[in-house]
Image (cartoon, rainbow over all chains, first blue to last red; front, side, top):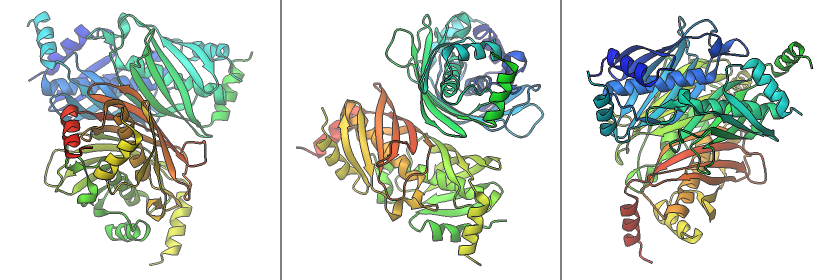
Length: 147
Length: 147
Length: 147
Length: 147
């Protein structure tokens, strides 16, 4: 089983520039946090759409790892995001992912996004990851990052 | 008519952190460039999905401005992105937008994304912008940014 | 509160050609059944995609009625469907809808589709309904269909 | 090369219940017509969403055949439809498909839908077909349908 600590270590090594924080990882699900500061805002004092898309994409990636192991080379093949409400300009964005299908070559799930402290979603995403050469890529990453 | 220069000035003022460059603006269309460097890459030596989503989102925003005037408070309501090929790690991403419907309250269009120098798209997006209080927001932005 | 019986009566009156059966209606959710026979099959002995899309569309429509009252003129504005597994050729399709946002002008939700008797979804959809002139259309339908 | 006549023959044999008519087939594109009568209408005197989805789905299927040969077992894996205007209740729906990527295992394209006689699209769709065992399925269909 992949632990939260292993995912955090992986993300720090492979996505050092990412502002997404792994809050939780469990059975086919994940919670990702994105700090909101000046860089994340857009006119109207609200969080930009691409920030929310990034959270959704990372949340799916991390939830998938929990199910199939850390698989760096898995790639997004489709992503649909619906923006539902204006996010708060002074609250972090939280994305809660739930996987719907974990297949051999494709993983599909949904992510609900919130401004921290509110129960009303600001956005909702569904997306598919493709797992090309999953075994090789896992082996490769492990061999470069021995425990 | 909104010119390329006006859009560039607007983007620099309102999205100073953006790495998207406005290459062209014409009748219901736009071309956006995103430089690709270490920050845009992910494992596998390819451009991260959120970078391409950002280009698609900005390309729709800018093409809409050409049609309805600069409207800062227009917000994305939905975005669907399909990733088609692995982008080059050493080429800029170009997004070419074509609007399909320009209504009073909604604008809908498509964006095809390329690695510069290739004719094979790396991704394709469709998205909708909502124009809430378009007139007010335009007036407000103009009054704060007199010529 | 709109009851299951009211929705069934509405569907029979307004969509007499529909093969969708309303199985359940409750707080922001619905279950729709579609019988599967020769007309629903396609090469490969599986249920055609448009049948599943129809179930998703009706499930959102009905779940919305439970929340905002019967609103015939509400129209779908977007629908994204991901097909996950081959449905059985000899099982009914069931669609289970859960609304995610019920706003004044837009309703957004998700629908998970199953072949009856299996816990593995065959498809998953998200969609948005627009409620134009909701009050008028409800009043109009009620006046034509007095209790 | 697959001709329009071959596609029409295939559709008649395999989808006898379909109301979609193949109007044109050419290099990576197709035009599909759907007659609009009482069965296609919904409250508000407009064409139901699933009819338009059906046209989009068939248009992609047929355009794909032009490129890769008749492949009955190709299946839709994702479909996103945006509804843009109210279709006429007394005009046929026409769907014009353009393929964007034709890969070995996936085909992706877009379909613009019109009420006949209007230049303003009523809907726009993007979708992906998966080609599992394309060769076998083509061979199988040909052997059952010798010229």
